[in-house]
Image 1 (cartoon, rainbow, N blue to C red):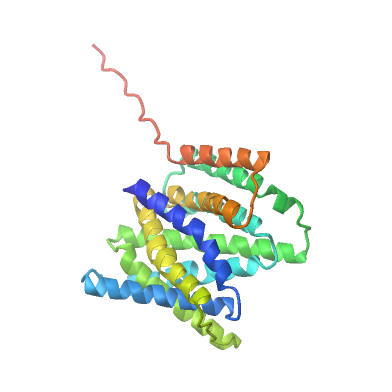
Image 2 (image 1 turned 135 degrees about the horizontal axis):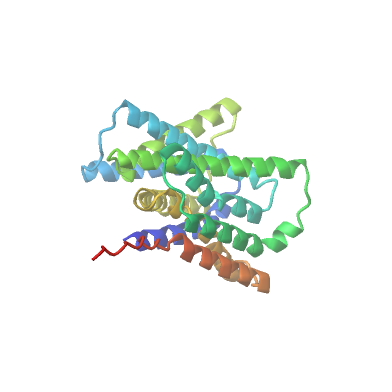
Length: 298
């Protein structure tokens, strides 16, 4: 079951970049994100009400959902979309892949979880592999003040993503399912984004064409309802650090799709980077051997 959820998350999030590119146009980015999570929340609430699986939340759980919505479905996306305007998308992917390491560190600090050496080693290998995959893009980018701002925003977005992971883990430890907490979190995220647009004067426009509507539906239902539910279920089952290795693998899926869509060509350093990413995946999911027990004295 965990393997199916893992592969589902990687495949879905590895293809959402196509829909994200189709979203770019007349509609402002924060408005498109608000539309996405408002639609995703609506779908989740309808499904949960029809199936009578919507759990009741107390005040503490609602506050955690609000915090999760702020971190995972609001600030996270605003930071990455804005960072992508100043730094290459490959650099954004490399920074985002550090979520594996941040999740391990934050789980240690805030939840007292032991940091597994194989998870850290696997995360580091995956990060190095991604850097090799995107090396041509990174090598030709000149450092500037905008670069530093973009790096800071990408790092902030990664920290927000990591915080959202830990909040979901806390909710699941309390017996709440990701379907319910995601529904509320996405609703809060959409409302926060809508409030930001109103305050900053961003107009609520809409493109009534098949390109925009189709990409919005894909991002809202497979990308958010299915993708985030599968991923956060993994966070509860496997721990935040192992689940976050998805952030290393979905850029690899995106590059493979780019071979057919945009004519991306594999190079020797990129193939070596792919090998490191795969080795990192093996390390992250390798189960530690049980400690050998001493034989009783005769």
